[in-house]
Amino acid sequence: MTKGKRFGLLLSAGMLAAALTGCSSKTETGAAPIDPPPVSAEELMKGITGAAADETMGGASGEMAPMSHGSVKLDGAGTTLYEEDGDGFVVPVSLALPKSDTPEQTALTYLVEDGPGQKLLPAGFVPPLPKGTKVNKVTIGDDGQALVDFSPAFTDYNPADERKILEALTWTLTGFPKVKSVKISVGGQLLPEMPQAAMPLDDPLTRAMGINLEVGQGVNPGRATPVTLYFCNQTTTHFLYHVPVTRLIDRTDDPARAA
Image (cartoon, rainbow, N blue to C red; front, side, top):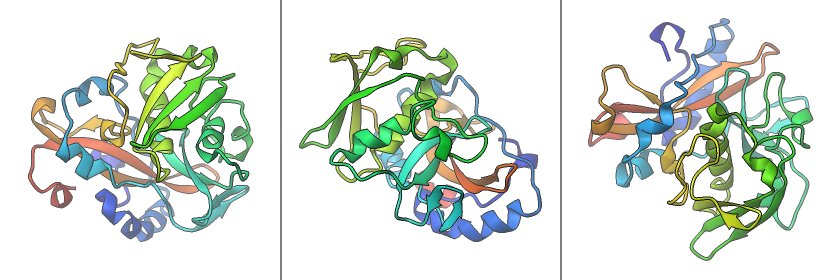
């Protein structure tokens, strides 16, 4: 994300509400959109676990300010889904979904390309899960781990989209109070790794994986602290929204101040 194209306020997750004024005031000036993150970013989070990642990312809900755009409802009453915007970022969008006894499973069906969520999204947005994917079942254990079983179509995607798929899936599910982590199976068989770019799935997925990952200039990823920042963006039809970005910065004991 280059300095010249940066806009909005940089905030820690707990300060998201304060970004609202910055979002509307900046986007009205017609500022250019932020740059997409590097496609190889998944390599940079390996080994970055524990309290630092949990503290800086675990509290980010992705909820946005009250506003509306067509059938997209951002009034706090919807379900927050993580979809892909026109710039390739995974971003939160709140939709009013049908009532269901299995709301977590219903939410995931709205992440499928050409599924029921496609027509509800702002212009330029696309659901990140592969076309034809069926969500067979979501089972949530007492420990908060959600086991999601998909149909084989889930494995048919562009390798460059692998991390986006996992981010969207993980951040959407962990937005539900009962879900703390996520495991994935296909046809009842646990996946040890993703099938295209081989991202490992040995450990349950949590928000500690980050979202829209990038590395600060001159930062050594092996000696870094992750912080989740929020930027403002808008579509060509003036739909305003926040883009969460996990940035690796020089190691610090005060991530909130650094953010």
